[in-house]
Length: 134
Image 1 (cartoon, rainbow, N blue to C red):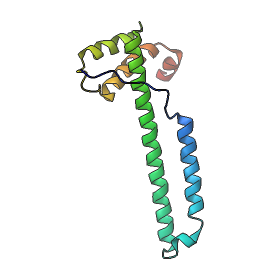
Image 2 (image 1 turned 60 degrees about the horizontal axis):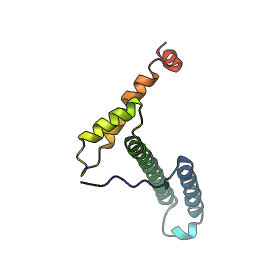
Image 3 (image 1 turned 90 degrees about the vertical axis):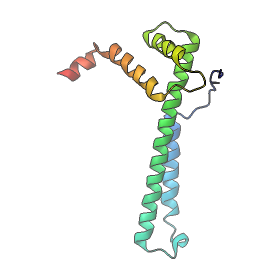
Image 4 (image 1 turned 30 degrees about the vertical axis):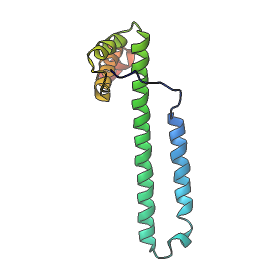
């Protein structure tokens, strides 16, 4: 049987990811200002390449954000199951944990489904939900 996940306090928060993306975006823009690197390219080719690099950076930042969110959900899941909290979400997650073959990781889709169900229950009677229905 597989051991539980080891949880560290090392993670990428959203501010770090945003700063990382902004720093690299500035660096790419600066790099493409110096035409000496690109003496065999036309201006159109250069602009196309710059646009591609910026798009790649954006995609990488999106994947970093998604990975960070997934990690947060998995850490929260492990914490709730280990600590045996008494709220509805934790009870449901413990039920799922009992059913999961411990040699396989629970799917992120399954965890997200449970978080969505519980959040719908928690916020179904909130004032913001009532306003949104109007």
